[in-house]
Length: 114
Image 1: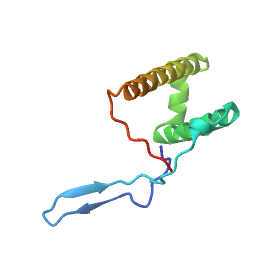
Image 2: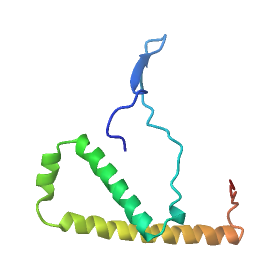
Image 3: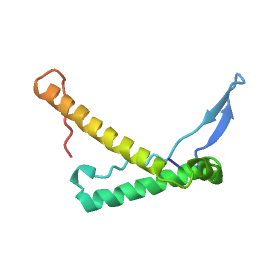
Image 4: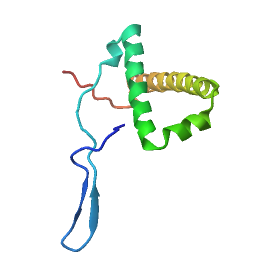
């Protein structure tokens, strides 16, 4: 998520009078090599991602309203942790199923090498 607008945000009008809204999110084209992360790097990366997501969401609405809605307890934190763990487990199961299907020839796979 992006917490501020970028330089490609804008609008234009065609010769026929149609209006177009133009939005280009920052297209950096980088990828973290998470598959090579150890537990310390993954925890740091998760912290960065969480901070980025929190910042973006905090700017998308009324932070005080969101805080008031969530309350003082840890029910939301626990729910997010439970969901995240279940989602990660499902992602691993899906990846295993895809890998097994590819090995058995049910899916054609192109592996890109650098």
